[in-house]
Length: 226
Ligand code: ADP
Ligand code: ADP
Image (tube, rainbow, N blue to C red; front, side, top):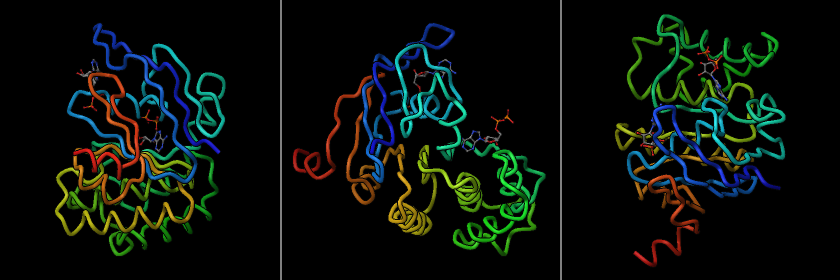
């Protein structure tokens, strides 16, 4: 089964900036897929389009068979997005943030509370459930964004630079958590600057540069060529 199928995807921003020149990309269900590339390459634009937050200019996107143009809500609810920037209400508590996110997807409150407890526990945030998010450390905010993205139990988890600026210890524990989620069947796509992160986590990768895919291979054969 195919988790993501992107063909001839283009994006030109309102100012005329061409961010994507015609991307073709397939990610299998169950994959742990890495999207690498320098700043400004188009990584955030690509995952923004997939997560229905950015409008594409042309091409097609299918997520688990759902066409983005025909059924954007099916695409949206198949995906959990962990954005690069913290974007939650800083005056809400940790528990409110994840429970409210579930409400956004129509998940009953009782079930939302159960899932909140489960995911906050597994990300080491349960003790902090009543803390207002503004006072959390950077690492805790990152983990909160992951918990929030998992509340509707998406088939595909998309993370934009999840460990940027995170210390090595937390980075390793986040890697373990993501591996665990992937082992349980969730497809993962992440963008990263760190080749080490891609090497450690991902089986397949694509390198994007200036809005074009310049490599799409498995990590092992890429490393052999470096
Ligand atoms: P990356 O995530 O790889 O750093 P982005 O997708 O953020 O790359 O950016 C790709 C290109 O699109 C860059 O040239 C960037 O300046 C441009 N861009 C990104 N967002 C916008 C926007 N909202 N308006 C105009 N140009 C943008
Ligand atoms: P806003 O309230 O800013 O208009 P939305 O209604 O699009 O934003 O989304 C509500 C909340 O859900 C926001 O916190 C947003 O970051 C988050 N969100 C939006 N789309 C997704 C997604 N596909 N996966 C996970 N969270 C999402």
